[in-house]
Length: 272
Image (cartoon, rainbow, N blue to C red; front, side, top):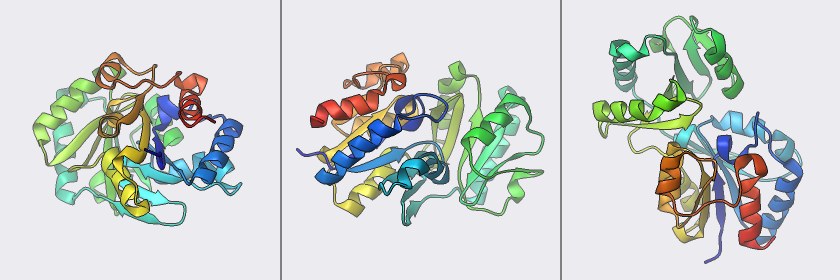
């Protein structure tokens, strides 16, 4: 069946490093996709605003893209926001209270992603705080997170990379089906609304553009990509992914992220 929508994770998947992508090669592919009426989607744990800034050099040339941001909590085209899911005040309070009671969270930093800005404690300093300012747009440091006046899409904790999966499992045990916890890379653990993931975000775009599951191709490298890699038969895991991801997804991209594996696989699959 013909592919009509291609969605890729960003960090560890589409980007080579430090927010870099092969712009010329990507734009040549976008030219080809446009003639075939295939949409390209940036699907990431990053916010939609951050993704739009990331691809601004390409967007400014007139190329169209769509966005699944905050791990599926927000979906947008270049022209409009299509969908968003927010955490309630009570849910936010439960997550922050859990963090305060967790002995392993003593040195943790809490990042709250809102529609208007990103919020961290004004006590946050050091490398983690620098990471927040790098990967999140419009960061505001506040005294009390629960007094923030914004619609919150997700809450993020940062732990050592090798501890992420155990903390994801602990959060899922505590909150069950009420909330969704997932790992996003760089030691991030994200807590989202019930049923929110990249696959549900992509479904919004499928409905908007009338695209079937068999017409979707996806790329990812981490546990926050699992739902969208498992849902679609044309789901490709990156060779640089961790072993648990390589074991879970049978289709492998042709190369690693630093070697333009997503672009190479698209070219091969579509005969570009």
